[in-house]
Image 1 (cartoon, each protein chain N blue to C red):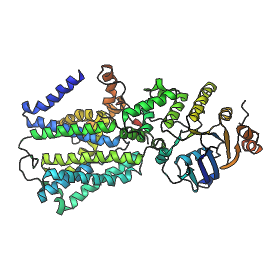
Image 2: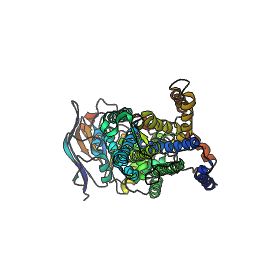
Image 3: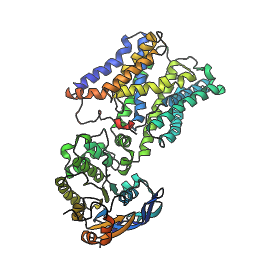
Image 4: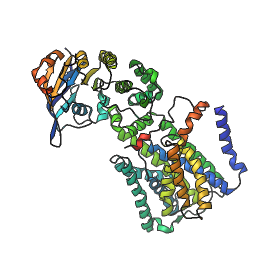
Length: 246
Length: 332
């Protein structure tokens, strides 16, 4: 029986008159790969921002390993084991690929030489070693997404939030990314991922949460979710319905 | 080869006062060392992406604190030094309030106010500072009172200060704090999501930057043995000049400001003394042209533009990112 790594109670966030996240309750267990889907504007990235600490909720509580983190600052949450990538990748301008990965290592390890070695290991694991001294602006989108993941992995997270890491990748690149995600979980890191590339998400997730208009409307295995009429209804009017891509 | 040349350079610098007697030349060299130290110190803060135009506040606060203690209470300048640095750090604490709340250009504007307000205070608080008349340090000689009959001891003092300032900057740049500063300057939110306390690292940069500037204020005042508000809180001399040196030499690098100071200081003196009479403020006009030229031809500064050549000649290792300037620190 795996333990609960992370859960929320009544998580709510308003922006002006809009309720982006509405009394959300969910939990994530250790070593799961959990997908988060929903139509555009459902509040998925807002949930990630609340978990990583970029915003604080208006109501509700957040717990990491049974410790409440609702008001804890973002950098402290990172040190507690919450790592994330950004939908639009944000590599540090003016620093090489290797230096980008050294940055998070250095918040846990002051020695620059040791940090360089540890960062090199991470680059090896994510297949970016040959680009160590490259400028992030000069590498491909797929490689930049890998760098984003490598940087988050370098924080030695317990929970990794992947925000649309497959967006903008061609089908070959998507196929190359999935084993990496499974590898991450096999190392003991729990993965929570937002995705619109449905087939890929369904093939890699064990459990899927579905949001619509700020609320959690379904939760279950990929198969259960794609057959759920409430989920299909949420996507009506959208160009994609889950499972529509073969 | 590189070590040999560095050693030769060091010996050359150490022995200059033995064969240079002209006080004018010594003064010029002292000014160059002073501006190397000051520009490097200012640059430490700019590593965090915060461009301060208020460093004259730190200079003046420390300078006045030490001068007042020395002149009015007979304290030795060696005790005035920590007191001055302490005051500069207090000033830095005040500057941290806008720094942590305002973005880029807004912060820079706010810092201008610091120097200006303190200058006014120094003018008005006559009982403490003698206002615009200024104060003079009574003439004595000796290391204890930090005054000398020739410029030679100050040559060595400022040489050491330039070396210490550059050393501190180097150590910060290549440490964990240095990486975190550059990350925070590039993208503060992304940096926080990776575990960096961006407020804390900015404060570290601010305190080092202000502290070194304050120390320079104390020593330079001893060198000129006079102090008055227009000078001690001069925006041109102690706020704008290091910024110019830094931008032209290469902002956000360790050696960029050094190069900038070496190039701009003699030029500035020449412009002021020979062409300042042609038309008042002509020197600032030339500064502006140079700045435009550099920003167009070598936007990251002269030193980063030279680095590819230095690396090709094996003068620099290939791995380090001395060239990788946080140019995005201005895109806030």
